[in-house]
Length: 113
Length: 113
Image (cartoon, each protein chain N blue to C red):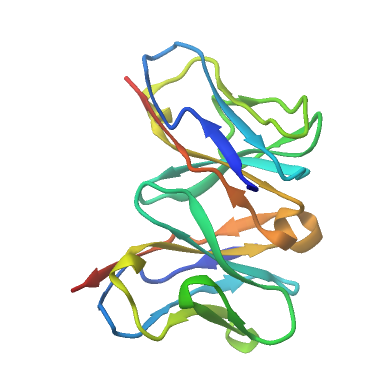
């Protein structure tokens, strides 16, 4: 069965520190992978997506993610976190033409001054 | 501006009083979906639609109805709301969710008392 696992429920980092949010997926075919961000009181905004090709994907707001097929992972990274990055982050897998879409349970990021 | 518009943003209602949450998209997307978001449970799909007059149940359809009479609109209907339907609701649309992911509305916070 398809699934998405975000093992960290909460993460706290200091402003200016680097960030890595973990995402593991289970899917039988080549996945379409996404990261979304939800700021407090807001809807979900797409940060980046991976379809194929280069396994390092650049997104908005200085985020990037790396697809590692051997580890079934799609971790989100940012070199230097800003206070405005405090939000909840969701990893998701799309099942291509089957039009199915699976969310992870989310990781809440807290940024310390 | 390409967007998904939900109304209302906030709604407090009483048990059993029928309500409709509207959703409209201006991107000519074929796929539309409703999610609810609850603490600790993440995002769960209620219903989705692949085109006009084509709808199907998601993971948690009980107590909800939808209709898709026009491509741009996908209202969510609660015929007899109950307190366990208190939640944050999101409408989303896509050309093909499994490939492109969803564009989300800003959310509707519903409280049923």
